[in-house]
Image (cartoon, rainbow, N blue to C red; front, side, top):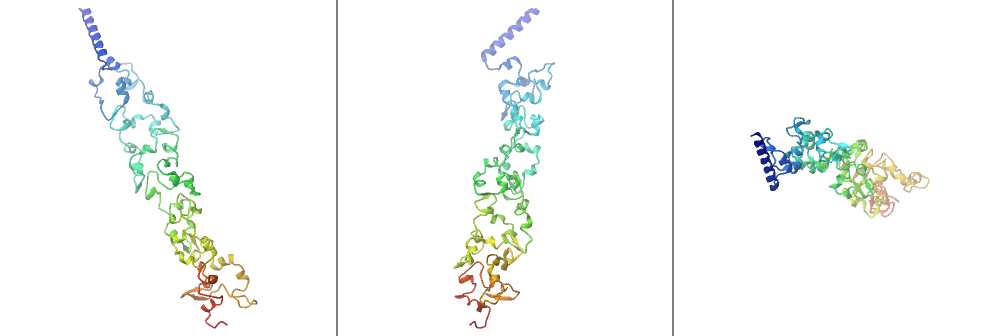
Length: 392
């Protein structure tokens, strides 16, 4: 009787195997092991299922189900990253810079091993997954980088390992140029030092910042990180755009074909604020016609009025030294000549000013000879504007 039952069981098994082989509906693992879901609450349907489950079933990883001698937990044939690297390329996780969870072999901190509603079997969607470790407030501010706002963390950072710091896909500025037009930051005669060396993040926050354009600080405070603040503040005379922190009203922040990163060449830059009619009369002072505004004026600040680099008389004598040595305005060759520096106050066009070169000459342009600021056909016509006595 015992042997009859045993033969009967063998026959049933053979028939089952034959039917299964003819149907071809089940994998070889299904023939060898029972359906795991009958006992275990396992979900095999979802947006993202681990490919190995579909390809080979549970036993692809749980290779020793119910075997007492199975050493790893959950009947796995290996543990930790050793199990994962049987399918995944270990080199992709072993570069110079490793994401801390990767370095510690904590794959399950980010990925579900079976099924997920997110791509790549992530346990949460991006950027929520990242905020499990990273402080979310550092990615929120007045100005937010569009990829950050869109949760596109992996558009700039590798999630596992990489060769660049911060797990960046590439080193700046090459990383930045994947979105930003490279021609706007290179190719011209003058390139701002931080731009030329790829230090984009010296001025711009890569994630979020308190100012527009992702600037870390307001201008001019941002500029003073490199440029000495004392060169732009504290003088008796400060150029209004400088006083207003309007650095970029004269200078390009990235690159320019002009010296000092100017927006346009001088004097055209100056004429964007100053009325050019005062500089383009019939007779123009040569430094003015040559656009040499900074020969006499400091563009940022000065200790003299009108942003002059030194006293007006000294400026004039730099180019006209003979005026101090020879008679100026004829009074006879044996006399010193007309004074060009004096505490005496004269009235010019209804305004009081100390006697100096500009009392008679316009330093920029004039419709009269010798840059006289008054109408004059001869050099003597200028005298009557101060001297009321009859000139013979």
